[in-house]
Length: 110
Image 1 (cartoon, rainbow, N blue to C red):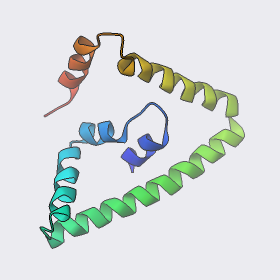
Image 2 (cartoon, rainbow, N blue to C red):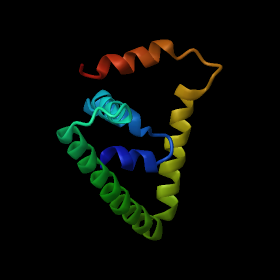
Image 3 (cartoon, helix red, strand yellow):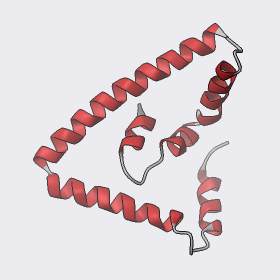
Image 4 (spheres, helix red, strand yellow):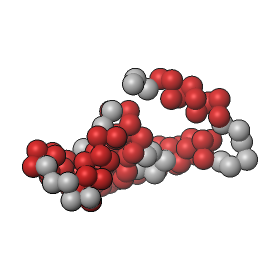
């Protein structure tokens, strides 16, 4: 649910959230196995549970965003613009971010 919430917001990557949670490689390996027709029932059920979490998270988060937009439109738009501007520091192609990115990766538990 957290990853789909991040995918709904600008400037935050759902894949990065899955990396922080330690689930990215696991989910990708399940999808890869299913695409190669290596059918494992327990992995399939985990993928179905993940899919329900994605749908539920998206529906709930969109409703929360809709409510926030109706109550706090200016503040929410400023927050979302801040997320987009902050993500430009990493995504901008003309700045060498290799040291900063390596510092972020050092914070992620392995």
